[in-house]
Picture 1 (cartoon, protein in one colour):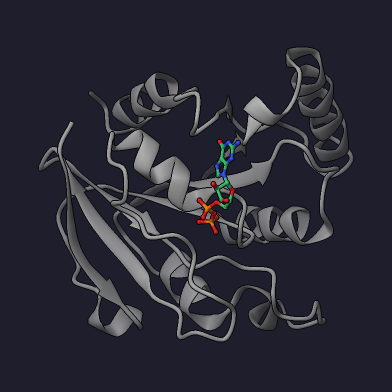
Picture 2: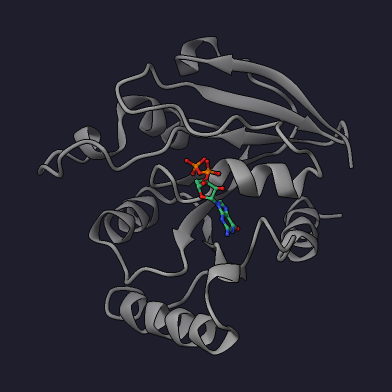
Length: 194
Ligand code: GDP
């Protein structure tokens, strides 16, 4: 597996349209996105640790094995929740997700230790309404006992089934334990039709 940084873009207007499939990673700030991306790519510091709130947001793009793009979307969650979803997730995130022909799937990262958070649930509902395919990756599972991981994932499923008829694919991950790498990469290959 070879991942190459291709650039960081403050707007989708300057994000090149490629021919290759794109897989995007997103979650609340501090959820462990950079760590998960680095773990997936066998790299210590490919994705930089999250930028501080207030900093200009960017979309980073990495070419993996010359076959697909890993898209590192900005973290969400600092904006105060308002009726305007645009205000919650940010224009950059929405522009990317709503108008990207080569976007095959979004990985929504969820901290495995926490109860379901409103902003994540709303974000996934918005993805569903917008017709954007997504999966869930639970992060930092090494911080829990194995039985707690199972309970929390089951609770999350129960919560999702209050609004969803079908559950998305889910991955249990830990960046420190390198857990979930094989499963996620296999899933990406499957979605790419490989
Ligand atoms: P981001 O803001 O979503 O990119 O999150 P980071 O990857 O920067 O991680 C936020 C914090 O959580 C950092 O202190 C990481 O070291 C820690 N962290 C991230 N993933 C894991 C994990 O799988 N296990 C543990 N124990 N800590 C993690």
